[in-house]
Image (cartoon, rainbow, N blue to C red):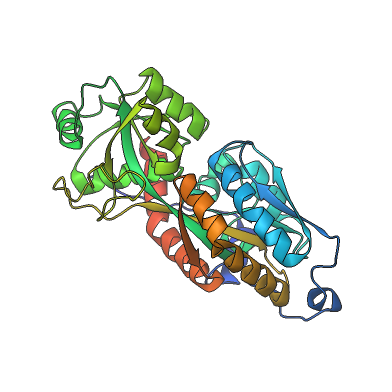
Length: 336
């Protein structure tokens, strides 16, 4: 097992900001006329997607946004700000005016690697945002090329054990959620992968389809199209129970591996110091949208499981996952 190290930052301002909050940025407590009247008719609210048009976050945003727009009586404009492994869009949202007119995808655990990896030069941390809730989750799967010689997860992992550091696996970014999950698997199962980093999830999937890497790990929705077309074979879903989207794919638990379930939480956040009244209105609107049958059906069509999580619970989850993953990221930045 690889020895973890502690990630140390000398950014005093960032440390002070984190000390202000135990579970993410806090909404402002001062009630203003603007907060009470939020949103004004005709207001345009930007939903910042920190990835390219057509990517997973973008697809889901365009499913949920119309329902929120109808509920709020304001325009919800999905704005793609890609670059820097999502850091460009997240920086933009963190520095936006805290008036409720800007919110952004802050998916857990992927956002952790954006600011805990110093090389990404993020101008934000957990205290920069206040969650408004989460509307869906995504199970993690392992996939191989359709012509791969590995027909089961046991065959793949046995090959990894026989040739440590030789079997290649693609991720969507250094210190991203794929990378974190692979390190967790290495530690929990005593494996050693040859990890190859790509610039995006699309590039990672393309590497699998072309046979450039032996396998890849990621959310089921990112592989679903290629799985349905037959270009990718899914060997396992890292859950205790089968996924309703790929019911024939065995779980890692059923294959005899004792690993904690892995999934992504699709959460949204506003800049910290956004008035609590505005946060509450956005949370109520997101909840209503997430529980709308038509929205849920479309989310399922994108191989994403509708699942409402309150703002308070997202804050707790974010804090908990940061504490768990921070030393892992510190270690992997040293190792790979």
